[in-house]
Image 1 (tube, rainbow, N blue to C red):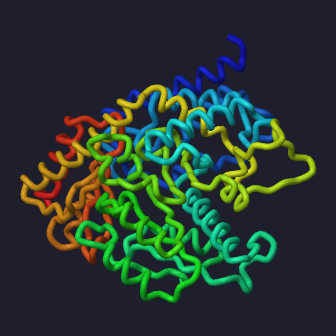
Image 2: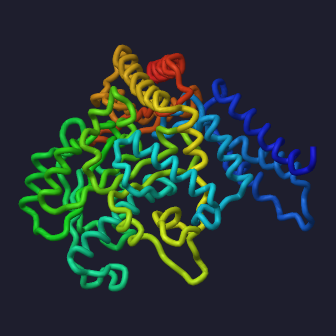
Length: 458
C-alpha cells in the first residue's frame, strides 16, 4: 500500500475496532481529566511527525475520554449511534474533502443533498416543494426557520429587515408552549428578537400545548405579526402538540407556524406513530435532526421551509466572486448560515439508502417499543414512571429528588448503561431516551437489571 492508503487504513481499523467493542465496553468510566488534558497538551513538535504515528497517538490520547454514545446502552440524550453506511459515507466525505457551499464547488455534494432532501420530506410528511437546508442540528434549524418567519412577516408588514434591521421594525409576537426546547429561546436571542417577545401557552398533562389556552393567548394578545412555535417531541416526555389545531389557530390570525421536531418529526416515518404529528404538512417551517433518530454522524440537521424564496432571502448572500453552477437556482449555503459547509448530504443519503422506507419505520417503532419495555420493567420493579410513554422518552422517579440524583449518578458510574437526570414539573427524574439502531431487548433488560441493583443497594 502507498502511504496515503496506509494512513487511511490505520484510522479505519482503529474506528472499526472501537465500534466492535461497543456492545460490551462500559458506556462511560471515571475520567482523570488532568491526565486526559495532559495527553493532548504535549509541546508542539518542531519537525513534522509521521502521519501513522500521529493517528496512533491520537487514539491513545483520546481513548480514556471516549463515551460510548454510539453503543446500544447509551440513553442519556436523544442520539443514536451512526449507521455503518452513514459512517462509511462520512469517511468518504472527509476523504473527498468537499465544500458544499454551492454546486460550483461540489456538484456531487449538492446533488446528494437534493436527493436526500426529497426522501426526507417524503418520510416526514413535509410538502415536496419545501426548501431544505442541511445544517448542524436542531439549534441551527430552529434559527433558520425563525429567521425565515421573521423575514416573511416583516416583509408582509412593509419592513425590509435585511436593509433596515430591527430598530423601528414592527414588533413580532412569538407564542410557544411553556415546555418548548431551550433552543427556541436561544434562536430568538440570536435573531435580535429577544425573549421578551415570547408569550407562553400552558401545556397539558403530557407536556403538549393546551390548544384551548393557545386560543386564549392568540385572541387576547396585542396583535401584530405572529409566529407560533409548535413542538413535535417534548424533550422530557416525547409528547407532540396537536399540529393540525395549532396550524388552524395560528393561520386564522395570519401567523407563521414553526415546528421544532428535532426528534419527534420522525414519528411521521412510521404508520404506528404517524398520527402523533397529523397536520404537520400545514406548518410553514420545520426543524429536524439527522444525528438523532436517523442515526447519521454528527453534526447533521435539517431546516425546511414552505417558501423557498423567503428561506433564501433570509439567509443567503452574494459577492462578486461567487457563482452558481446554473446561474439561477438557490441551494446549499443559501438555506443555511454557513458558507464553508461539510458535505452532510452524503451520510444522510447513505443512511436512507441503507434503511429504506421500511427500515426507517422499523427503527422508530423498535425504539418506541423498547422505551415501553423500560417503563414496564422499572414499573414492575416498584419505581414510578411519571409520563405517558408515547414515543421514545421515559421519566422515572425513585422517591425524592435527592435519591433519584444519587441513583442516576450511580448508574452513570457503574458503566452498564448511561442515563441522565432532568427536572420536569418540579420533580427530579431519571430521563431515558431510546434512539439507537443497535439497541436490543437484551440491552434494555440488562440496563433495567443494573438500575434495580444499584437502586436497591442505595
